[in-house]
Length: 106
Image 1 (cartoon, one colour):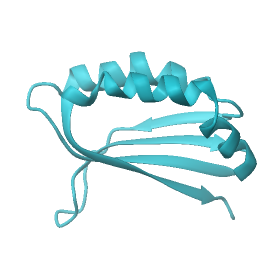
Image 2: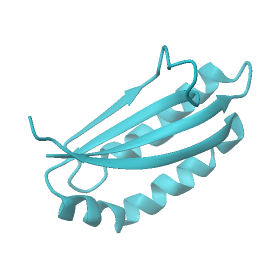
Image 3: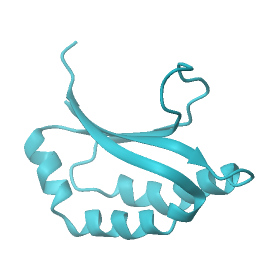
């Protein structure tokens, strides 16, 4: 199994935290669940991050059966929908996000 993880670093604008998480759940999560080959989707709202590290305010994980399955999902029309939905939440935060793909070994 492979997990494609999105790490969101930065800061949600003050007073917009609940609106941000609600928008992610309502706009993004349904699309992520429809990604081709997605087996499971998880969202995490970090409670504590090491003090000397960049602040992380959202972690998203999607499990796939193979790297080929991830490539298929990334080349699908659902990926375009996810990008468009992401554009609707950009105003809630300052920062960046990046992806890490991991293969489960234990």
